[in-house]
Length: 249
Image 1 (spheres, helix red, strand yellow):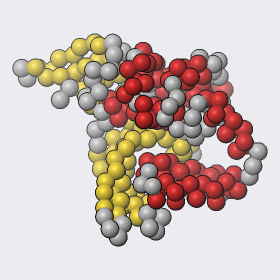
Image 2 (cartoon, helix red, strand yellow; image 1 turned 30 degrees about the horizontal axis):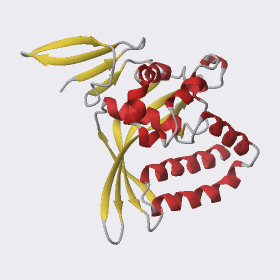
Image 3 (tube, rainbow, N blue to C red; image 1 turned 135 degrees about the vertical axis):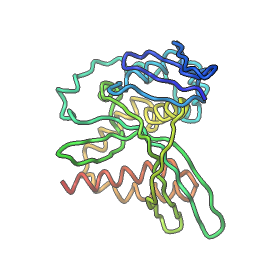
């Protein structure tokens, strides 16, 4: 199996064994290595990976058409070019992004199935506490300088949509592919529509007590579960938990 290593400066190194010897090759695009396992250099920033998507933008617009849901990556590229504050100037000095693979075992009275997908979380590690939040409504230009890492463990959940339950079961080791990584990035930046729509939603949300949003979000969660949109359901569940946790601080 060939492996991809991406450095902090965006260099792509393809590693493979040949005649019992480890060989390395510098490549300039990821689009022909989607099935390879991927490792990121410690400290690599989110913007480095997004730029690798923009290099082959037309290709990824076709590949991730479902994740983009009718929007164009070119719209997000414009947002990306906005001026960015330095990370140290924001109140997120100990904040980073983490790529997590999630395994849902979904059971009901009639059937059971498995859903496997990859998500990106905002990770805060302060005062030796470890907390995950979703990237919802964070403009791309605000998170581009955050470091990103791959979680080598997969979260396994048991999902019962009749009871509206998503219960963590255990963790296991997992290897992430290039496809997993790039799909999760594309999904996260496009989940709430175009940059303009995201900004309108954020402005609307900021006017209200966050707790007042929970009933509506829970209705959306139930609808997503009923329609078997389990990736969306997991995202909504995380948003609800994020709101509740933020109000307890």
